[in-house]
Image (tube, rainbow, N blue to C red; front, side, top):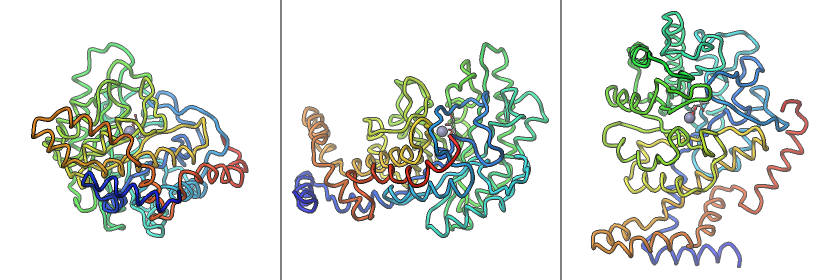
Amino acid sequence: MDKKTAYQLAKEQYASLGVDTDIAIKKAKQIPLSVHCWQGDDVVGFESQQSLLSGGGILSTGAYPGRAENIDQLAQDIDKAFSLIPGAKKLALHAMYGDFKGEKIDRNQIEPQHFDWWLHWAKQSGHGLDFNPTLFSHPKQAQGYTLASMDKGVRDFWIEHVARSRKIAAYLGAGLHQVCINNIWIPDGEKDVTPSRLVHRKHLLESLDAIFSESLPRSQLLDAVESKLFGIGYEYYTPGSNEFYLLYAARKNIAITFDTGHFHPTELVSDKISAALLFLPAILLHISRGVRWDSDHVPVLSQEIVDIMAEVKRNDAFDRVHLGTDFFDGSINRVGAWVLGARTVAKALLYAHLEPTKQLSAYEQEGNLFARLALFENLKTMPFSAVWNQYLETENVTDDRGWIQEILNYEQEVLTKRNAG
Ligand code: RNT
Ligand code: ZN
């Protein structure tokens, strides 16, 4: 059966449930996905060519050849990856990915001009930008603490860095005439039992207050804070836990970032969204796949990712829930990993838009909970792939039959000619 006929039949089948597939495609493609830049080089950045320093609370494993080593290579890989991802896109930068031109610019010296290269790239390519201060892979983080440190000098250094990050994000937002999210994640934590949790959390609170003391236009900048249960080497606790940041975000009326790898495996982000939406202006999602722990594997189409997207769609909240990816796998083709993870999110987004929410709610209101469950189950064998292929076609993006080979060709033509792994 040709693609067109397959789509027509799928369209009819979804229509019988009250779902218009053309509208679903149109809506899905307008929702921007903020794709993280750090998958392309195993979170190394352009300050030096060191691998992710241990003791930073996160870890990238694998030495697959072809890692991007500079801004041109990273952008080349991003362009390739973006050409295979349908829908609106932003690129999430980290402060260590500035265009430093070989100069040693410390974290408390970063300026908007260091990101002009990316601003230009974004304008040229029509994509948005988001930002993250980088509080790891640095000697001033070596004692395990940054904004929550007992050492005022260390805290002040990082307050300066994050304050500058906010200004850079606002600058990028102004340049692109759209909101740029500045997402703060700190690696801080303790490997083993400490009597000082409250003191550290008090320091974190005061550091954040100092950072947010400058008000910047909301039309350019959305502040977000990312919670985490534990980090590698910081298993005992992290001051930036979910309770801490949820309460802080509510007090400051800023966004919480939910990373799908940052919770106990039985805790689900899909269940947190509706709670946070009642108290906070916005949510940023970091979609990753934790395998047994916060391992940052490449996302695949899991029930949880589908549930997250469905939750946002049901509440018509895509203007407040911002989609982002956050994973890093250096053991497989990195561009392929990027595309696979981002296509997964795009698929889940489309899948959510094909949900006959009205019909499901109607069954519920009638008290017909059998029919509600049965319809959810029927949806799993609906001809989703035909609609997905149609979506890719409308975006001029290679379909599922062709994209793997396109990645393999890029590996042969570009990646294998590089030195780094
Ligand atoms: C770490 C957080 C954070 C980082 C990036 C690189 O656990 O998820 O978002 O992955 O800042
Ligand atoms: Zn994250």
